[in-house]
Image (cartoon, rainbow, N blue to C red; front, side):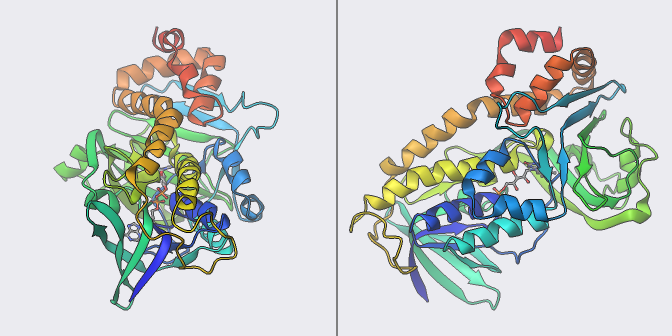
Amino acid sequence: MTTRWDAVVVGAGPAGAATALLLARAGASVLVLDRARFPRDKACSEYLSPGATPVLERLGGGILDAIERAAHAKLSGMKVVAPGGAAMCGHFVGGGEEARPYSFALPRTSFDTILVAAAARAGAEVRQAASVEDLVWRGRAVAGVVARSGNGKRAMCLARVVVGADGLRSVVARRLGLVRSASPRRIAFTAHVSDVAGVDGVGELHVGEHGYVGMGPVGGGVTTVALVVPLSAVREGRRDYRAGFFDELARFPGLAGRFDPRFLVREVLVTGPFAQWSRTPVARGGGALLVGDAADFFDPFTGQGIYSALRGAELAAEILLPAFAGGVGGGIDPGRKPGVLQGSEPVPYAALAPYRRARRREFAGKWLLERLIGVGVGSPALTNRVVSRLARRPDLADLLVSATGNVVSARRVLAPTVLAQLVW
Ligand SMILES: Cc1cc2nc3c(=O)[nH]c(=O)nc-3n(C[C@H](O)[C@H](O)[C@H](O)COP(=O)(O)OP(=O)(O)OC[C@H]3O[C@@H](n4cnc5c(N)ncnc54)[C@H](O)[C@@H]3O)c2cc1C
């Protein structure tokens, strides 16, 4: 069977659901395909940086109310413990009067399901257990996808634009030939544990000689715990990080004795390796773009992935809606039946190119800060030095934590005078 849409969105995580919601609400016909069935788990520390809250507010659709109703935690900042034991704690400050000085943290089973439901309410058709296998081409342009449903049947879904929001191992990015990867290559093991000792209203990052642990409460007495280690350590295969999860945690500063292995309430999920990104988020021949982890994912240390996915969705919608309206048949009619196209040509590269520039403007500082921190935590000596310094400079600690929380611009930390104060 073949169907036609304005947009086929591959992946219903935060990037895909938010993009679909914005396009469908404006009257575009949108099909969302996800190989999973929701609620589905996702390896994640499940902290929404405070910068994500205004984006969720703008998305509307009752999303923030639903988050408030779900079991969740509110975090006021981040604590970092260095390999040598020094500890610093920064709080989210400086987002202006309107800003909420905390981040939401809740299980991805809840959060992602809330977003998918909001996208469906906005008019997107969501098909679950539908795995995208390939792209459909018209000349050099992408013109749709081939998807296999749960019963094994394949269908061709044609679209003016394919939005690749299918995460770290994006099929869309791979088929477009855009995937790149680089050091540091790390693997994550994530779990839910209840009754963890000493958990309070901040997220925690414990940096060790080899890797780090990110953890924080997600409501209902549950703490999400992510152990991130170098790919090389896992490949050597001397230790079983999954079976020995709690023994591994105890090696990190400040974590020994805080967990009871009997209180593991969700199996340990494994994901990676990162870092991985796409050379460009736009298909060179037109007809496709990438959002969220499919476009870039460097390292989970700073916990900015969900914010980037949601903000990237806004940028994508800002570019796509005028591009659709410029198609045959004029502007988008909100009363249109799903699956009925105004124009059927793939959106040309020229109309999509501004998305690339918009991402660069929006994320360049964040990318650089994320990469610097990602590389920095690979050096125990450097981490000891910076954390010791920040422990004595709460103002700098607040600035760094607020920048990684997307409350203030990353550029403020990247100023040479600030970088110098962090290290010397
Ligand atoms: C260990 C770890 C901890 C993290 N902690 C945080 C944190 O605390 N805060 C934060 O903001 N970010 C964190 N992140 C990053 C965050 O999880 C991602 O950035 C975020 O999930 C990106 O959203 P997305 O929608 O792009 O991708 P995803 O959430 O991965 O969604 C992609 C969707 O695509 C679907 N899909 C994949 N392939 C196909 C296919 N072929 N066909 C159909 N569907 C497909 C998947 O089923 C999935 O539902 C963490 C990541 C890791 C690995």
